[in-house]
Length: 320
Length: 244
Image (cartoon, rainbow over all chains, first blue to last red; front, side, top):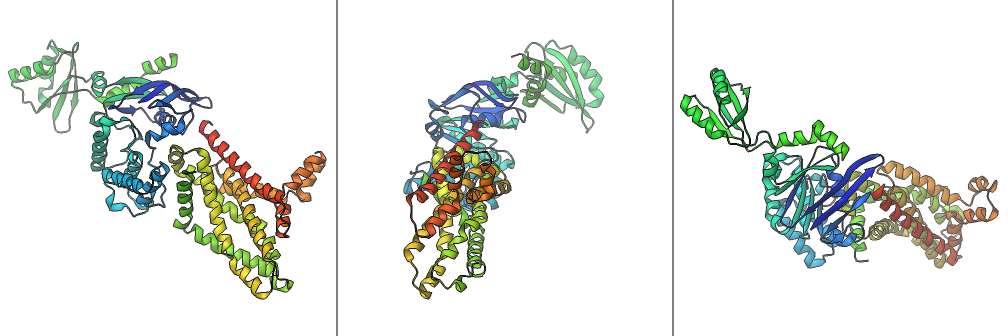
């Protein structure tokens, strides 16, 4: 439903988004990740028609955003960064305005507004000016505005930024609930969000896509993927490290001291093997006083850091 | 046209949701009264007409109208709502026209509230009410021209103070373009046709003709054309900012 081809945006000599191509199908929730200034917001602004691309094209449900702007925009619900709204209006007035601008009249408008209010749980603050609302409520007003016309495409720029854990949970539940029917792009720099709601993650860096896959695929790129971590008293460190290194499934061992007098020993797998069985068998055999033992799915933040800042990435993007 | 209405309604309601409308209307009426009665010596003239009242309108609008127009676009840009507004499925011209009409309607409300002076002059004598109606219409048209210029300039910046100052300067040049201050600058090198053209751009000249009761279609067309021109420029400016 969202097709992006060769999208490029230059600001003077600076290229914010470079030849980005992507398509998102119905049912997908695409997490758009990247360091600050990577081009996430610029890309979203071009998808929604707020910024004109320097090159390339965007199609929403078959409508080209540049040549058939109205039809494309009618199919999009957009939550811009920071959830801007008219602060002097109440939430109800604001949502009614959005409904009317989107072509709903009288009873239909009220119906749409009420539905959006119910979904975002805004009932309690409807008649307060938006500028007096808490950050969480402001964000929900922005969300209500975006989903009001039940659009097939949702573009949300940091929908959970600045919310407390309860509010984040509510917003994610809302997004998950709509996911099957829509094509959704959310930008975020909260990596936990990717695992929580995204079916696909795209990492961009300096305006280019540097990774594209399911959250599981991204996790598999982590050095920690399938690693086993064992926590034992510090006194056992030498003995445990020596024995663990001899396991056939273990490629490398790293240790990290903890404040409570124990040590974390992480064993990295050799050739995609699963060291946790060997490690646990060894621990039982040696009768180590094991405090914790767990396998790691991978660390997204480590993958993120590795592909957005490493020199290898830098030279690769420069050459491309 | 369907989509102009919600834009108009929101913008118009915004004036009254904040103290802006009340402060503006009070100052507008005080200034009108002060200039008419004290500076213009309305009673001493002993003439039952409103020409003194109307003669100050171009100068009062010069400062009051940019105060209305400065926020039209600059505020949207500053607060980020521009992004919301321009990604709604509304043609850009409808947004531009809706905003302009709301500001114009607001000025019309302020102008309408000067009606006691019309009652006064009718109580004191028997003025030519046809001329007064024409003058009100001319005044409103002139305010529209100031507003259209101000709206266009407001679209170029996110800073309301800049929008205000630049609008005052541009409107001033339009107002006085018939005077030697502006014309001398051009007379030195420009052909006579150009000088005459510039001279005919003057708000003062065109407005004065209307208030004297000479309703010439050219004066009306002048203001309407100016409004259309600057609203078109407004659309172009907003559109250029998308790619610039």
